[in-house]
Length: 73
Picture 1 (cartoon, rainbow, N blue to C red):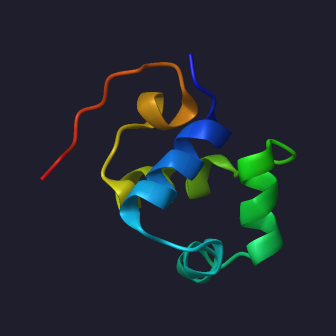
Picture 2 (cartoon, one colour):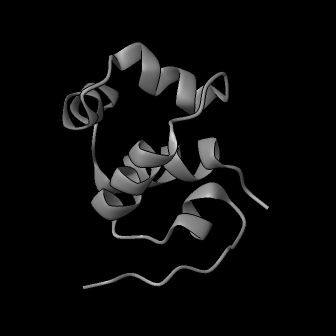
């Protein structure tokens, strides 16, 4: 099963966002995004919820506990 870092990077790339664009969106530094994608850090729960909402995926998919997601329109 994929981890948060893999899902997050996959979602970012498939949505066409740069690391800097997401850093601006989530009010963090670009280096924080890099650390999330490299698995050196993980966002706090509140930020995870914001990321899931932003990409319109559920938390289980985002954190890698499920390979299936329900996208909410």
